[in-house]
Image (cartoon, rainbow, N blue to C red):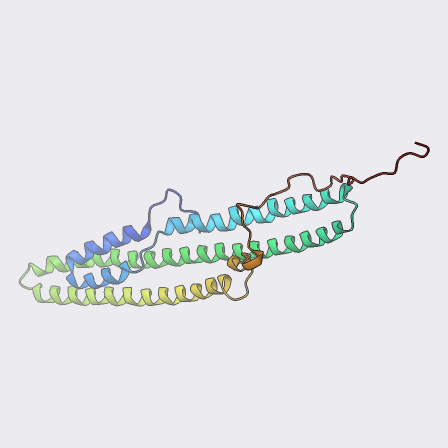
Length: 237
């Protein structure tokens, strides 16, 4: 689905048409109430999907990985202590977890994109149905003012109203099933043992960080200063 920046919301447009149809046949009011439950900002969903898939995922993919790689390279220039190897190993693990997080973000973007397409298809289907129904309802309204067609016009108008409501109920039920499946995807992403359970990473208890007292040493990690120690006096002094 293309990002919807600046685009009109198809849900609002179709809903306005549906209300116009309800003015011609009161039975369609029930369809209005049903369809209102599926109103969504489709253009905004397109923007959100683009942000998840391109912007956020892209930052993790290139900027994040490149930064970690640069840190690893810089640490090996003049860091001669043995813990440099342990540091590199830790950063490699972190780099792998970054990639895992990026894949989760990509999945979120894809799911939001598919949901936007589903909503769009839902409203396009209803819009097509209502557009045709309004034309027919105008004909039936004209039939009602004639002695010969009054009864038939009323009957056809009610029958079409029932058909429109039944159609809306059917496609709305289908949309609900799709949303339920998408909800399961998000539940897997944000639940269980997934990496993006960020609240599990917050230190608690004795490990909790008091940022009011914490002090960060910003000196270069490769700088080594010889500790001060008492030296023996020169021989013969």
